[in-house]
Picture (tube, rainbow, N blue to C red):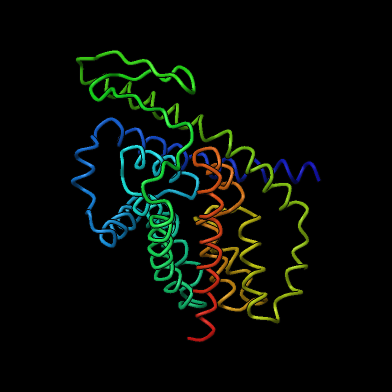
Length: 305
């Protein structure tokens, strides 16, 4: 049992770590090169267009569900509206090119509807959740450990969690140093929560008897809820969950497998801990609730369609 937990933990952790590093680097580049004023001009003031912009950004950043969290937090620190940051955070793990390709290979020759539904519903759910969270938390500060360092043209030394030290620089190469400093801080700020989440997920995976899932596969609604909970608990990266979903085709309905493929990239145990390390509890619990409800509604719509 301990051996299995260790193997699964290492697998989850190292599968997520490269994407987490990528997210931290992107976050740092945003901090270093994009000022608040530039970002304000890039994001449309209109709520609908702004939310769609967040989804559009998600397509071009090949990040998993953990990696987008430091980027979304950095966007919020840059005064980007909550609806934009949330839509980006939810869309990227589903519609980025890497995930699209893996979903295509997994389902296109067996059940191509799942491939199309995952893309379309992923975009629509990200849009709706972004709008809802933007309305609920409008003009609220939802970030924890929100260090404000007004060092636009200065190098930042993040010495402690609640302290930063700035000193001026005059050489272009110092921008690279600054990016590394920011990336290192963001990475170590998030990785501790990833480790704890990965440990919980590995314990659940090692101890979960998957035959229990089959008890609920005869009822459409229960089947959807079962695979949503399953996706939340096993915490697979969105680049690999398509092939697990494909293996469930013979036992579960199309709608329940779609629910599994939609919910997992948006929220699971490991990124819940990462979220709790970066956002306040009310925001995280509301986000989880809204995602579960909307994913269930959209997945059940497939039965009607």
